[in-house]
Amino acid sequence: MLKKTGLVLLVMLVLLLILPALIVKSCGGRILPDVKVDPITISVWNHKTEELITMPLGEYLGGVVAAEMPAQFHIEALKAQAIVARTYTIAKLRASGGGGCNRHPEADICTDHTHCQAWTSKEAAAANWPFFRQRTYWRKIVRAVTETQNLVITFEGKLIDAVYHSTCGGSTENSEDVWSNKVAYLRAVQCDYCRFSPRYTETVRLTAAEVADKLGVPLAELKINVLERSSTGRIINVNTGKEIIRGLEFRGRLGLRSSKVSWLQEEEEYSFTTVGYGHAVGMCQYGADGMARQGYTALDIIGTYYTGVQVVSVQTGE
Image (cartoon, rainbow, N blue to C red; front, side, top):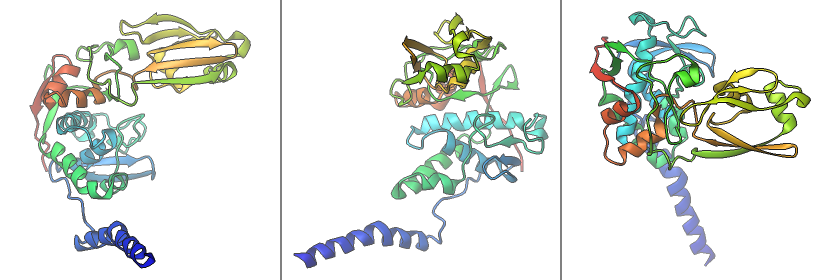
């Protein structure tokens, strides 16, 4: 009996550890193909390693799609993300008249998702996937970038500011209700497709002292009074008892997922319940996946979340 058990354990060891290593070795250690489209070279500031690197636009876009959207998403959602990411990036390229990354003047774009777009190398992306899914997932991302080669989003002939977010929570937002400037193609639209998002709602509990500290208000003066909400329920302006701030800043200071938030105060504790995740302007990523799973294409998705836009082909050149 012990010999049989030992044999079973040995077979499992071979399957789980040795066989994958042999597969990698037989492939020359290169299990993930390169993205061979969009060959123009761009400069990227890697905020994690604090270095300026250059790479083909296609390689960069593959890394953005891998970092910004789960590889398990429907291919049409990934294709929509690739088009959006390409549009955002080309609009920043200094070689094409863009302003580049204003935090890192030597770069076209950076990898900090709070400032530009998230990015990861294919090796780092693969490390977060199950071994036997790595090639499948990466090929799916390569397909999303390849099948949308040269496609960008325009409004009245100009590249749009292709902003996006994780989960809108039922409706996207008008740009002016978040950032104050009105943009014709960034209009609030109903979205019934992101309800399966694991980030759809969340409750955060903070003591009154923590809330006061995060808002920079003396505890004795703390008084949260919403002055204005958007038609979708997100805070536009709020009085903290010390100052009036925008809803986006209020959310950021408290570390909340969304400015679509309500709360209860019980003695010395606040319970904040948010709906959605992110600023809610532009494409809802979980909504894009929900649409794709109901048969909508990448172009349908883009046309839904960006009002009155066109998807056109541009030549990025060698």
